[in-house]
Image (cartoon, rainbow, N blue to C red; front, side):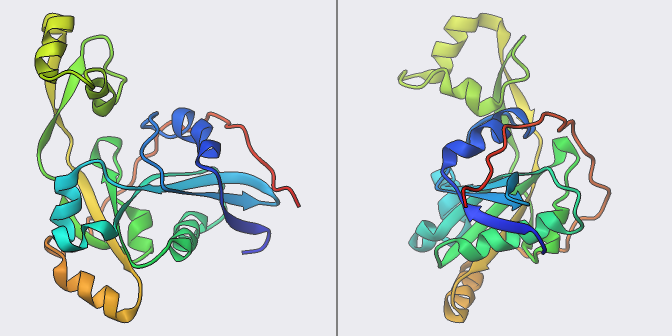
Length: 225
């Protein structure tokens, strides 16, 4: 695409985008970060990191291949050029070290079904498992993991939260997410991972993707040429 480029960037350069423009408003684990540049100005970010849940890492391909799992955990683009987001994701995947099994989720609570992943030929493996999130009355805007992090270091974390917040601390059912995976590597490595996949391969979900308020204008970093 004319005037468009993808560069690996320091993960700190994604923070303004992730904290204020992305709907989750939370910094995930970041191992690889990429910037989308148009006319030398950054107009998008995409990050990948190790999933925090060991059952998730082991559950996709099994424990023997768990070190290949990486999550595409943030994607935020502020550019209306046609097909730019799927092109950006594809370029980022090509720049990742290989072999990798990339997992990503489309949040049903946000009205997402994963159109970008479908355009990139990800494999759809159904909805995530039913889970609950920790919540605190008056802090419903905070991510469930952010609430859980408040008890880090305490032996009985749930008991600590109940003692600190009383009846304001409660559990809420987490909306299930559409789960997508993508294999990258040699033909032999891709075949090995596809054979090891523990989730069923399903038809893509259909529907209209809803949009959230992303009007915040992040600090952009131009390329130094």
